[in-house]
Image 1 (cartoon, rainbow, N blue to C red):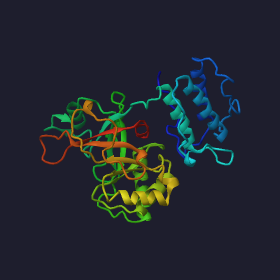
Image 2: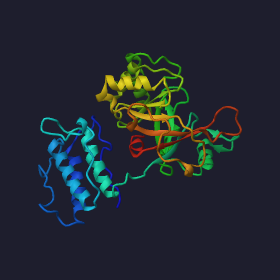
Image 3: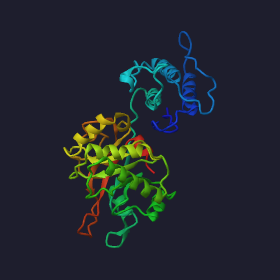
Image 4: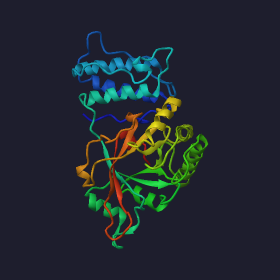
Length: 354
């Protein structure tokens, strides 16, 4: 059975919990029910039928959805649905409104029903590079993009490029990558932080504003995730991470932004955990692009399972992109590092790219 895609995937605290989300879940559940006889007592009925446009997803809607999906799980003997991810696992009640996380929970549970209880092993392979994809490389004989494709023996479905600093993405590259013949998504990494102090909330806020300006100048639409580049030798403070995340959280770009970091580094993990303790409601929407690996470069087909070698101490569940191969596909005709890094993205990570 195919895995149902969802509108606004994933739902975030900035995603209005509209009737559309509940209605498409109901439609998917009702279609699945047709393969089975009704259980004793009948299928779980719905509250508010039909839902009207802009009706918020109430606690009753997601709670009854959990019950309905449990009935489907029972048909496949999949066991008991896990606890809710919010409120310490407690169900939403009239006094605790439905969260975006509740919508994501029921979507995941239904997708697990479709995949017979197995997490769909979907990852997306791509690369990132400081070099422009349209650079004529390899002693003037081949575009950099084509060289990477040749050496990896696979076309990447996304390419990470810098914005807002050195080696920035160009409009020509955007047109090249988005061309219908390639349909390559772009992962945006803001590197205006390079060799800059990352000490205060105000600095985090200023860099987020600069990243937003750079993305808007290039035409990146709302809903795309922007990553801040924090290299292993840099020492960001908790306050800097809070400033970056708070500003991204209030912007039209996705979630609370993302952080590219060497997640094995003592320079990153303590301030990241402190930021989560200080601003949990914002930082729970801060995604991680994990750099740091013991893996070697190779063909794309030899990619490892998505299992970051050094997950962050805090918020490991929010690692949605992993740089597992570092400085690969060296251009043999230059002495500097014209290389690309091999990366994997989860479905959420891929969906939030441009």
